Image (cartoon, rainbow, N blue to C red; front, side, top):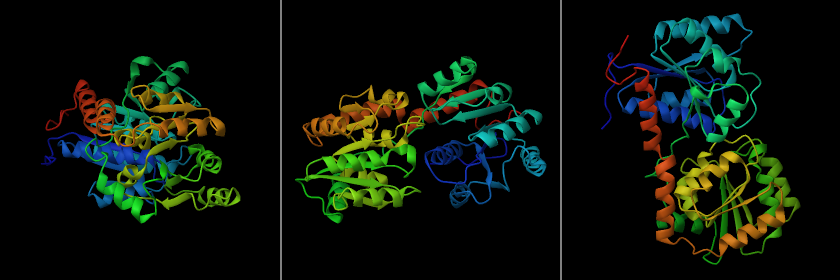
Length: 373
């Protein structure tokens, strides 16, 4: 049963300048939801037209909309300052570049006791200044991201690796979901269904999947679950390569766990920028063998399990070999799936993330049910 926040509980506010919907925004909403469940008061500062604003409001999470986050816009600074000074949060957690600069600076000026910056992507940063001046703690979504920041001058003592927690009870294999999805899309028992869940963006590498599909035998089927700005280009590539009947585009799905259960193999084709992808963790929790491109953040969870192969991006022959090898493993063997689920849940489950969040807050004097101001 959810504890009801009260005026004696500390207020935790997240900021994000992103207007789109993806893994980062899912992480923000997950933290807000879980902290509220534990008795914290929560709030969100985002652009008024952000998808995150709409989804948070639908869950009755207080949303404080701004017109924009823009460092060179005086009105944006004024608007943000008015909100933060009115709310007087105990914690501000920033997520994207623009809001991290602005909300981090405003939080320091307003003497917010705990300022956190979450770094979601594995990519060089343009400057370490905002990481050094503003946050007390930097959450990184992988060990590789933490190492990247350290190499660029961010103090290692500031970083805490906090991978996004995925609901270990939700992302379990379901024979019922498997049967329903495969029947709905005409996937027979003799087919090997290779799947990918993710937003259709360039760095997600879906073109690699389609090229591989064209080189695989006819009994392999491929399913892309997601939507995005690359959809038209990817559909055109599938048509060009003559695999429109074997590569299924099923669009964005609010219940990806149903589709994961239908897969036999996961092809995780992202080739840059990922932290530890939620879609990858969800696939592993579901018990799937995984073919993945070599990225240090991706290798972190895969090194914990047995059933995976790594390839270089766009190496189609290696991908074909990897899929054929993984297809020889026992298909959906219960003990094998349960062992993988347990290992991944221990390291990347939702409960573990929440425990680490609460512990970090507590080390800085922020505890549910106690305002501390």
